[in-house]
Length: 85
Image 1 (tube, one colour):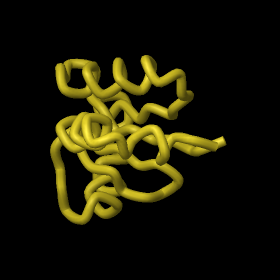
Image 2 (cartoon, one colour):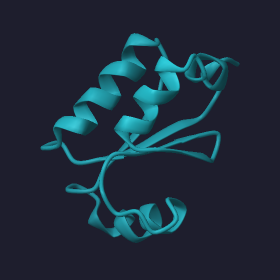
Image 3 (cartoon, helix red, strand yellow):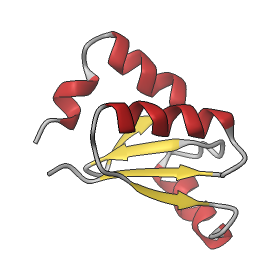
Image 4 (cartoon, helix red, strand yellow):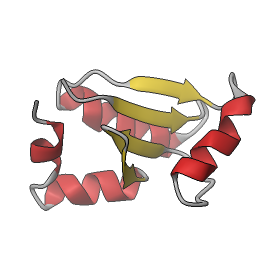
């Protein structure tokens, strides 16, 4: 099974949209809410190559990007292969 991690803030509409798509795909993911765990922000920025906005999404430690990039992967038919076990 793929390991999917998403850094979020519960107040973020883009985060909600990204989680909605992942839920629609039927995958399990680990969510790190930066409002509850602000100490994880530096970790996210480092892993995301300096990007500091949320959400930031990783599949098997591979950086996928933000919500727009997740939806673009899906539209291009490239998300399902990334999520496949």
